Structure formats: structure tokens, C-alpha cells
Amino acid sequence: MLIVANWKAYIEDLAKAKKLFALGKRLSSAAGISIVLAPPAPFLGILAAKNKSAVTFAAQDVSRTTGGANTGEVPAQAYAAVGATYAIVGHSERRATGDTDAIVAEKLAHALVNGLTPILCVGERERDGEGRYLAVIREELTVAIESLTPKERAKVIIAYEPLWAIGKTADAAIEPDDLGEMVLYIRKVLAELLPGKSSRGALVLYGGSAEPDNIRALAASTSVDGFLIGHASVDPHSFSLLVKNLS
Ligand code: PGA
Image (cartoon, rainbow, N blue to C red; front, side, top):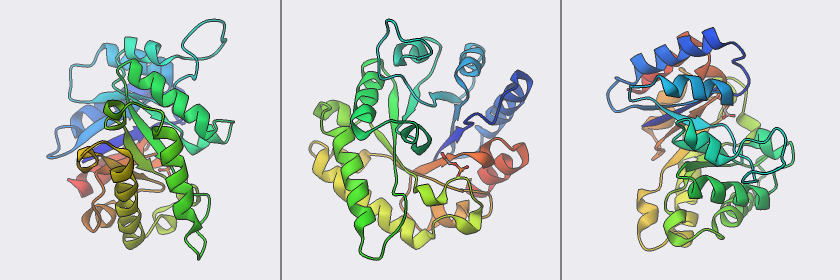
């Protein structure tokens, strides 16, 4: 199981970042769990420089540009240079500030060229009775992936994050049956987009109010490969319990 801790902007203080990193290192010894931390950019550089553990790091986003006169942008290459292994791309909180499917595709390409494994977020805003949300997921996956080479496509990790479930509590998260169905649907679309049989090895994660109370049920009755955890990953008690409940 892959657990990606998306700290978002919850952590603004280096001392807190260091404490959560220490916790992540302890928890990474739990059986069958790989922990990836996605801290705010400056903290990623500081923590990764001292890392000798099994914990790995993800950028929360990468720039769509590769350098040049772009004040405030952080290119994928810079994240790779300070020790990131993964890059979250297309998170709904980035899409809300203007990342279109086309921009997400550019970001994916930059991440891959710089050796980062992208974690592509897809998710519908709401669920309708006619299954239109399935078309939203298909479109987001297709536009993001179709411009990549076959070899690159096989490297992308998918995080299914329905917008309606993000930042709430376990009782508002997705039901295990609905998640199970969506994971199968994503695998079906990937089978069409990825070369040969490579979609069989593709990782599909879930994010959106995954908490200690629901994590086990979500993992047990679906073929999900891991979780992208937001608010519960920055509370040491919740994060410990969540990993314990999963392992
Ligand atoms: P949440 O966030 O766990 O706080 O719902 C998940 C995410 O947005 O990645």
C-alpha cells in the first residue's frame, strides 16, 4: 500500500514539518506500507536532504514551465534536484486556480522528463444518477495521458479524488462499493490508454476524507493500491492510527 501524505499548506512551521517527518519514518517500518510525504516546497528540500529512511517525497505540484522568466514557479527539475521522487499533478485545488486538462498534460510531461513519477489526480465535482461522472473521469485521464509516449504512460500513478469528498470527515467519504466500482472503471480506461498489458501494473489511489475510521473498509473491499491523505496526514494521532489500521 502506498500512502501519500499531502500536507497542502497546513504545515507552515519547520519544527512541525520535522516532527511529522520523524513520525513518517517511524511509520514507514509498518509491514506492507510505503510512505510518501508531500510537504510545502521549501520543507521538502530540507527534509529530503537529511533522509536516510524508506520515506520518499512528492512535490505537491510542478510548474508547467521548464525555467526562464517565471517568477514564483517551481519547475519539476528543481524538485528532482532536492530529492523528490514523485509529483502530484492535477490536484483539484490546483485545477481550481486555473490548471486545465491541457496544462495538467504539460505538467505530467515535465515531471516525467525530469525523472519524477507523476501522481495524476482525477475526480468529478458531483455524482449524477446517469453516470455522467464516469465521462468526466475518462476525459481527464485521456487528455492527460494521450500526449505521452507509451513508455511514459505506464509510469503514471492515478489518484481518484472526487471533489465532493475532499476535506470532509469519514462519513462524507465515498462508500467502499462505489470506490471499488470506480477503481475498476479507471483500470478499464487505463487498459485502453496504456500499451500492452502494462495497465495491469498501474497503481490507482484514492483520496478524499480518508481517515482512520474508514481506511480499512476502503482498502479491504476494493482493489485500490493506496491513498492520498490530506487533513488526516498532518495530525500525528490520526496519521499514526490510519497507518496502523491499514497495516
Ligand atoms: P483530504 O484531502 O484527505 O483532506 O480530504 C485529500 C486531498 O485533497 O488530497
